[in-house]
Image (cartoon, rainbow, N blue to C red; front, top):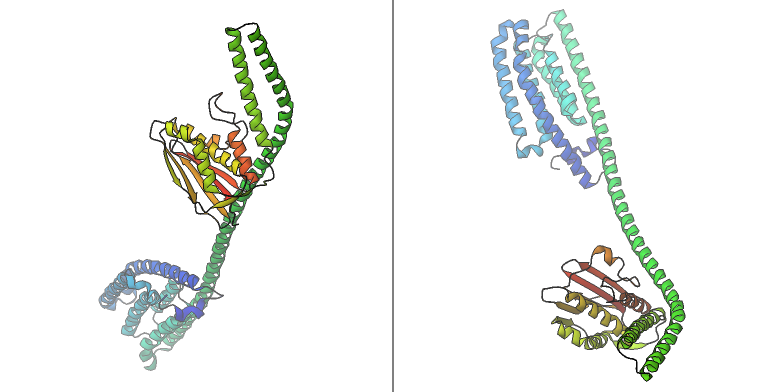
Length: 468
């Protein structure tokens, strides 16, 4: 702060940064100028009020002293006005000295006119020093200079009377006044020094507390980020363990259900043939047809479970990711065309990954089919976008985005759970996205989903690049 650097060594103890020094002087200037306004108001009231003392002690000087007091008030108001201007923050320490010194000057003029070295008006000078120490918080150097100036004023205006040989009793009063002014000045000096040290210590304590609070906030933020990461990792581990367990469970279920289904299917075939031989048709044939459709559906579920449970180590080859996606689109050309969906693709034929191409085709075929079915449920024109994203050096990411009805937050949490589906009964087994999850996980990649109700859903599949 301008005008403050010369006072740093006076009352700043300890090490403060440049920012903290500026903050200290900013607070000091604000408090000092606020006290200047208080002292100015107080002086503007008390200075004229003390004219009552003039009337009692020096009635012959009442009118001349009243003029001096009015002039003093005018000077005080000018200083107060100046303290409210913008430049006051630069010179606030000087402004803080002007009001007490102005009062001391006018009191000294009164003492000079009286010519009495033992005058009781020395108390007015003491009052100025007390105001300095109690309200304006002068620095150590400022207190020394101001005390010397006030004491010097008193000596200057009383010295002619002292040299002219005053009455011994007046001389005793003069010495008494000098002692009291000097003693009060010393108290003000020591008090200013002690006060500024305490203010500095209090300020540094606040700064340390502020730094500690900032550090605690930063640490708390890092802890929250770490907890969020741990929570996400925990969810992924839970999902991975759950999928692994379900894979093992599915293998057992397949074995237990597969054989009875085959026997039942053979028995149904034999029954159909036997009935055909005896010429039984009509309702019986329809019932057998319904049973066959149910068995076929169960066999499809078992087939999906087998695919789900046997996704393990990947032994494949390098292939173009865009070719796998285009293969999935070719498989679904008819439903895409019939749904009148606008298909947008932004692919890169140079992006290659390592794995089983047919499984990756299965993943994108499932994602695209789900998007088509979602878009069919809305009234507005449908759009399906498949685009390659900029990703890390060792990853390639593909987004499959639709503008369908979206998925609620509650359903998103379970989207990759086996047998969980938002479709109507009979329209899906709930294994499609679970199998996709296992396939991508087995390929060392990730699959994520974001969705907004009434806006659409976006699946992001990330796989490791293959540079070979």
